[in-house]
Amino acid sequence: MIKPYKDTQGTKKEQVEQMFDSIAPKYDFLNHFLSMGIDKLWRRKAIRLLKRHNASNLLDIATGTGDFAIAAMRLNLKEIVGIDISEQMLKVGQQKIAKKGLNGIIQLEKGDSEDLQFETNYFDLAISGFGVRNFENLNKGLSEINRVLKPGGTCCVLEFSKPKAFPVKQLYNFYFKFILPTIGRAVSKDSSAYTYLPESVNAFPEGENFLKELEKAGFSNTSRKPLSFGIASLYFGEKL
Image (cartoon, rainbow, N blue to C red; front, top):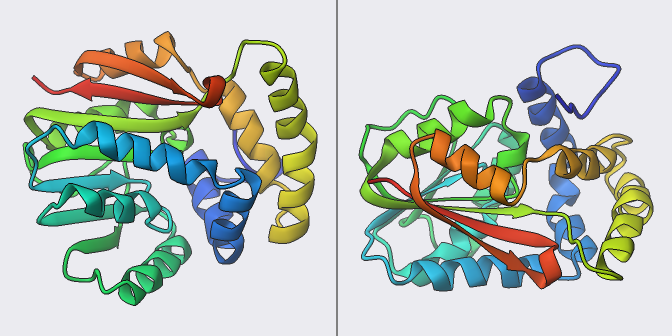
């Protein structure tokens, strides 16, 4: 199991919470800067693909500072709930939502993805952007998402993946191993967070392996859509 702080005690969940609390003030800047803004396009693509669903509410798991939840406003939903284990990330997100005047629609609250405090069969849609690989127990987290979805509900996961084609693979590996950790460490002042990121991506069961994880958690009609030459992927699963 990959943890953010190798020389520190604590479960992966505890360390992930500590890490995101630490980098929260610089997270949005680094996220958009290091991805050159492409992460925004990926979220918009996900929302466009979800527009065909007749949904009224949505859960954003590991919402962070709420970017995916805010992007989901394009779905014209009545209720959007975002949960995260990091209070500091949520504070940044709540400030953004208040500035946009979205408090009446988007609600961010502290929550554990592996123990969701919502009724079974409650949400029409569930989304998660770059958060699933941080789950301590992947199957438990995905099973909880499945539980809170209504029958016919859809889960959409946006995660980094590993490109296979030359020269994207080589450029991606160099950037992730050397450039990203150096800039991330200098700006965030956290010596481990942006080293953990490529390590967690490398350990994540991407592609067909993740589709199998969705199926193990009870999802059907699973599919994957690679983005930007395979740098990231959108995964979909339906609760029957």
